Amino acid sequence: MIKSSSFFIWFSTARPKTLPLALASILVGSSLSHWLGKFDGITTFLAFLTTLLLQILSNFANDYGDHIKGSDTEARIGPLRAIQKGKISALQLKQGLFIVAGLSMLSGVTLVLYAYQELYDLVIFLALGGIAIFAAITYTIGKKPYGYLGLGDLSVLIFFGFLGVFGTFYLQTHSLLWQVFLPALGCGLLAVAVLNINNLRDVEQDRKAGKNTLIVRIGSQRGRIYHLLLLVAAMISYLIFALNTFDHWYQFLFLLSIPILIKHGLFVLRHQAPVELRASLGQMAGLALLTNLLFSIGVIL
Picture: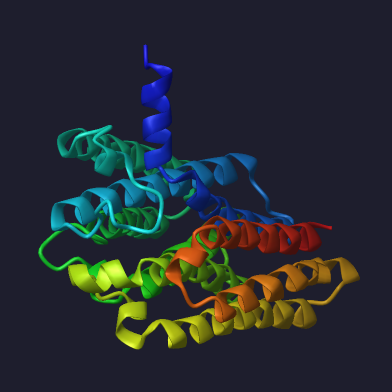
């Protein structure tokens, strides 16, 4: 039996504030499947479970990799990780990482076996699943982790935007529509914005540790402008989709999130001290989920 204290330690290590990102891309992909009249609840559930496990795997790997490389110390502005507090050891975290990787693989294989129709679907999606697991682990682990090379933003855009939305949509409809690119792009850009807040907050520590995130490379001020551009580009993507496929005004429900996004964007732009962005990470994750939820409800209605 797992002690409640142990559960909360591992729960915090999973970084629950980032987990809405796992829900958002599956929500959008499934709503678009419903739009074509081909929604499948079991596929949606398995896709959500697989993406959730991959997000947790990435978070475990991030903590482990940053700990091994000395990037996360007690001086970090964000909340201290369990491994920094000594609540779990590097070995325990590594073991947990392997367990979640195995569960991710099991869930992903089950999803593909349930949803595929053609042999090439099976081969392609099993390969994509393997790549997703590899990418989640190598973000901060290995000799040249791509998260230390400023490629984290691109990875998030691909996996939490294009792959998450297109993959969920295709496994239910077994078709590809160019219009799906637009909400997939919007969903991915909002996920990148969540990562961007994290990198803006930790920029000084990342620079000292040699973790060359995009923000370390371009600087905090440009990073704040970049954050606004991410939000604007995301909303434009949703708007173009709604205009191109217009059927009912419900499709514009996502516009209700604009005032909150503007308030958030202006706060990020005006507050220069990284410590002031502590609460913004969870807020941005929530805004990404809210925007995608409103978009999905509009598409379904």
